[in-house]
Amino acid sequence: MRAPDIFKPLHILIALAALSLAACGGGGGTAAGSGGGEPVTLTITTAALPGGSVGSSFSTPLEVTNAQGDVTWGVAAGSLPPGLDLDDTSGVISGMPTNSGTYGFTIEADDGAATDTQALTISVGNVGLSATSGLVFGDAWTSQAVSLSADGATGSVSFSIVVNESGGSLSNQNGGAGTATYTPGTTGGSGVTDRVRATDAGNGQTFDLDIDVMPNPVVSHTASFGSSDVWWIDMSTKFGSHAYATDYHKALVDVGLRATTSTGAVGTEADEIAAVWFRVELLRQVNPMFLRNADGSEGSGLAITFPYVEPGAGYTKPAPADWLNGSPTRYSQMALTRGSDNGVIGTAFLDGSNNNSHENDTTSGGVELGVFTNQITPIFNNAWGNTLDNSPITNADIDALKALLYGLPSPGGRYNLIRRIGRGFAYTVAAVVAHEVGHSLGLSHTSPSEPGSIMNASALISPAATYAFTSDDVTALQSGLPGAGKSTGAQAASQKSGAPGGGVCVCQCRARTPPKGR
Image (cartoon, rainbow, N blue to C red; front, side, top):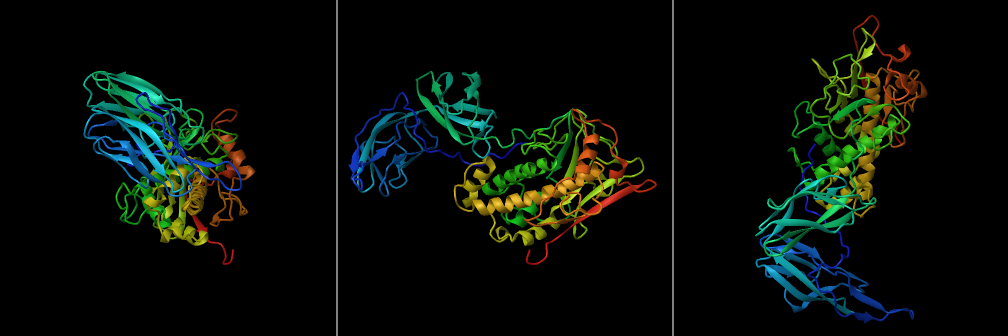
């Protein structure tokens, strides 16, 4: 699955080690402290700047500490490379260099109480360096390879990592073609920035590319063939007529996690991040329902895998009424689709003639295993008191969405609201997914109905509701699913929902809303 590369890279504001062409130095000014303590000193902490390339966009921030007020920036001596400017309020140097060469200058910062200066250098060459593939939303994900390409060089190009906070590596270097592969290391749970340099052997000029490295949120959500039943949750289906590319898009619109105007396959920047975050969150919610770890690893649970990426070529779905039994070449699908029967939020077909379950999702009548998101969203919005559907996410929410995707602290904004609605809706959909997969694996409705059972015939959609498989359900599934210590025999007949005398049993599951005042 290729994630869209549509976001400009973020620049994490950190002080970097001095480059070989950078000149460090400068004086400092002080402002009086309070209460008799040590004086507070305004200090420019930027010690080095990346190189630029003629005709390539350039943007890098300057940073200070201990500012007592708004900082005004300026060039005190020397000059920036032609084509670049310094914003006197934000401290960002940006533009497009027009001439090659090495340019030295002195930056001054003034907070109204003190000033500081710093001598810096920018080297502008004709060689440029870019990431051609592998970035996700402008970021590199841990352990996910990024393809690099240099152009404009007069000779062979060599590559090096001059700032390596992630512990990344370079491989597949081809100096003549100006290409290489950069693979970031780990981030320690938060974002870091590596700096990769291309050096033109023809004239010694360099170009530096900053690459933001973020935690990989789906690294563990992979299919585990041969020891698990592998279920792919299909979010690409479209049933009926509506303006959105898929039912998944429509559901996100209905709960406010996608702009109402994003009717094509690709939405806004915020839409695309939200779509990936919600899918990851759905898997984080559904995995524990099958006693797995949230990231999809085995934990102490059942032998069933919900991968992030659909199994590729060489893997097939089983025939109807045929068990997976941990086959290394087969997987099952269920679809998140719209439904035509008002109030029905999920459907599963069971084959009663041979007491086996259907484990694929297609029949002549349409979807066999379905979660009807268009029936869930209005009930969810009412039960959760969702106001996000009236004020959908926008690009102003990008920082909050990225923090949610990567598991980073709140950056402010609508982070808490988006998290509450996104996680709540993901849990609601996951509960219906688990319920219908339970049917397809042979479980009947809990009888008598147990409010907390995930196989309850009438799910109560509410923030206060929690669902889990009963101990009897778990016992039946453990005997039917593959894996270490588990047999592959038929499940207990009492857990089956087959129609007497053969035929097909159709389970249509409905939801109900909590009483008023709950």
